[in-house]
Image (tube, rainbow over all chains, first blue to last red; front, side, top):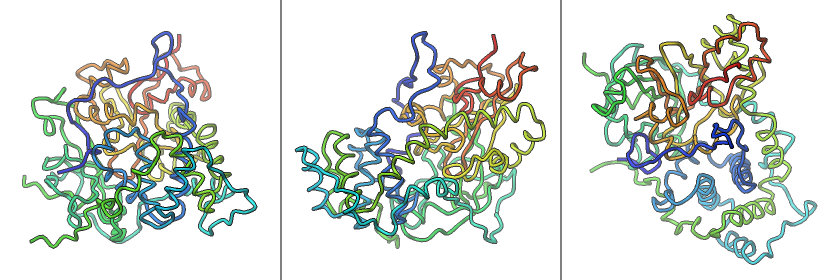
Length: 246
Length: 213
């Protein structure tokens, strides 16, 4: 069971649209943002996130929870905008009345930014002078806690099947469907990281051991595997894994 | 019966899909949201400008290219890079958002590495910037894990069947960068010359560095 965002391995997607220049060479430099509204959608999402009302896992889950019809039809940054809108309403940073008011003002051309002097900045608002500092720090997900990993490098493991999130039906998870119920080998241990399955639902960070797990292409795709030697590696939290009897 | 808490994540049923009230034109959607947030003092326009300027002009694949070129000329640096990429990349002052935990994977004559994020669009921002549209596309996300060789062919890359492909699906907060092989005939080139050969796609695994003519 999964959602539309979990698309690894599915059938039906055609050729990748790769920009090419006049000589049919792959373009080396595409614009960072194709349209100004892409840049704005991206920047307001980051700036609103900096208010601290939600974390990265929550915002990912909001995008994943868009109704399937919308998820399919929306372009990348349209998904961001829709999820941001739902977050802003749910976290009560804006009201539905305000949203409707600004939407109709935008549509009939009467929308207006009030002058900076008349704006009272919220104390949580991310200021330009802090941008580089905050970006440089980022949002590390490693937590220095004393948990020993259960698995060792080289151990055989089998991934959870059907529904990895044990707290929330249909909840957020980072175990893709294509790698559920499959046997892999622990490639490396990556320290203890905030567990998205809980963190996306306000259930705390609950940091847990994270491993890189290597799967043979034949284990994932059977006879469809392009080349038996190829492998696919995923970063998986300990609760996604069970020991596979040798 | 299951004791699971039943806030299944489908939050929006509570309020009739707030996002459905947005205008159909995405430019107007942005305009409405941006203006509302600015007027409420929840975002600052100078911050938006600073963010966009940073990723349009300062953070991008040129950063990653410098990391790769340094690894090509400095064996000790390469060792540090493969051992602890986050620290080694920080030596060049690249760090932070979406690159907090870096891993560099090395291409060799036997192994070719490719990076994807099937669940969203995870990408190492401090060294590569904002991902290109194709990296975020359904086609790349769905197909790369199942048929990497066909995907690479679309990028003009034909790999010998004896070369093993390793596809790294960025499912957690580890961010990957491919260290491509140094092109032949570049023995006399210096670091800055070499950096110019390193393409963005060669650091994702969907391309190779430029050859010298």
